[in-house]
Image 1 (tube, rainbow, N blue to C red):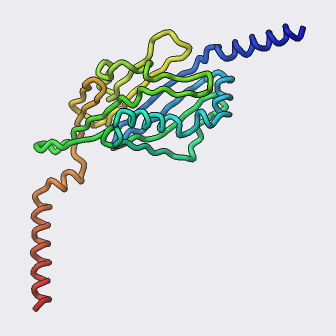
Image 2: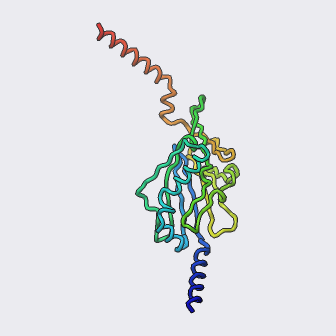
Length: 234
């Protein structure tokens, strides 16, 4: 009887570990001066959820961004950085959900040049960072390198929403989706492989710096200072 009970217990544990998670997994990346990332997993199997919550060494508030940065550094992309609110609550027991928010920045992730004629900012946004593998527990992980391997140039682009969207459609127990949301004023939007390129109108600071009046004003100030200095020296 003891052997039967042990076998039965092991069977239950095994079924629990391999049972489908049936979760909804989403990544949203909102592009501005940096990239605001929201990583959400909803309706997680209670066993997986509780185990994730109880093992902070495996998964915590910094796991995803540090994994991303480490992956980039292994590719010699070292001009990257991330930031987050250390006080954010990532676990929601009422929904068995996990939400992690952070920002990504640095020239190896997002950069811009200025069009000399229009003064528009031309942005180049690298999106390869989305391809990472993360463990939630010892026995369960998410492989976004597999889910979102399709180049972003082949994703669905919505002109009205100004966003690139992709949904992993292979049979699975959840439906990973990812979208990159561009600024509302973005124009000339296109993508080359995994790089999103777009333009936005110049910021007030850009207009000021490009204005000839700024140069003229600076010269006038220099002349006045020189004149006052000579008068004082006399």
